[in-house]
Amino acid sequence: MAVTRLKRKDRYNKTVSRLKQQHIKLVIKTVSVESPYKDKTGIIED
Image (cartoon, rainbow, N blue to C red; front, side, top):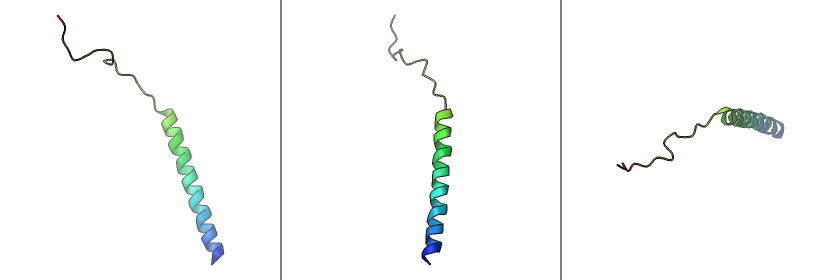
């Protein structure tokens, strides 16, 4: 019985680590673009 629990735990750990790696790659690949309106305010000056 203990062997099957260890196998399940091992399989779960492998799956979780693979998903973490995929997520990290996805986050690194994501390009963040700075807002072009960052330095402008909502106040209209004449």
